Image 1: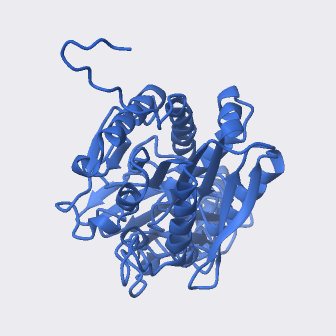
Image 2: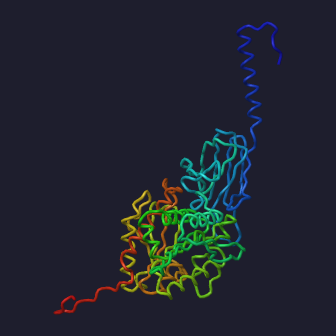
Image 3: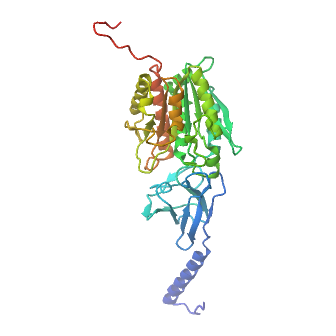
Length: 420
């Protein structure tokens, strides 16, 4: 560029404009290419296209052969110009396309994106990122390392808590678990809470964490429950699929929640069944809760319960008591308003191998078993929202146990007879 020897105001302005244009073009050309990575625990995402000019990334969940639904995705994006807007397109609907995805700039603190825009069977998210690296995911991830850390923290702060390994998986991974036992006393009651039989349902593990954090707290009601009750918690049942970022639902030969049979295929299911039988044989087992996330259109938590015709009158009474306690305590932001669904033969041909149904069919007739489905596709389906559900579940359990589940039903009074 030739600069005049004598600069007039007009030539100065022209020169400045040309320089800004040239430097701006150089800066645009210097912008780093966006790169998508998934080679980390729980990572998933197949890159379909990256448009470096429009800063648009298009992905699908990684398909893992025989590992169940391809719906979980979790990617790291590098090469971001801090402050720029990244466009992320994901499909196919409905399982892989939440209205709001999750993003983080440190892989620890997670936020929801703005609501996406549906385009055919995909959804497009646009999010300004003020960092050179960002992570995007279907929802806030909860990995096997998070489960290990939850167990470690609980045992560190609560003398009633002990860590144990439920089993070693077929993939050679440990399944971390927690057991709370009253100090110096035989527990009169035992409950079992587990999450993540379907690996993609990450929100269920956050609910589980909320439950554990309430249970180890100094809330008098949590302390009271710990003083009388053995509580077993398994934050992730399908550790192998969580580790590789697979969905797990309907995997081969069947998923964990269709494996509760005389010959379980999955070792975590086998281990859970053995422990539940032990508690039931000792006359301690009172409650079994399996934590899940439901379909995309669900906006509030609900419970799956066993078919009523499978239940004795005592079990039906106890289920109704537990549901009433849940309705009192689980007030939101994701409230339980009383909705239940039954999972019997019309729901699934393998209904007897569903965990809560196995518990109903194989334990004493006062034991309550239920599946809590916490909505994942709402503005409140965040870490804080999920953990609040977990805390409120703990309060509901404590309230329910205040009434003795083993208390027999009152005898019917015959005509002419007086109550005694």
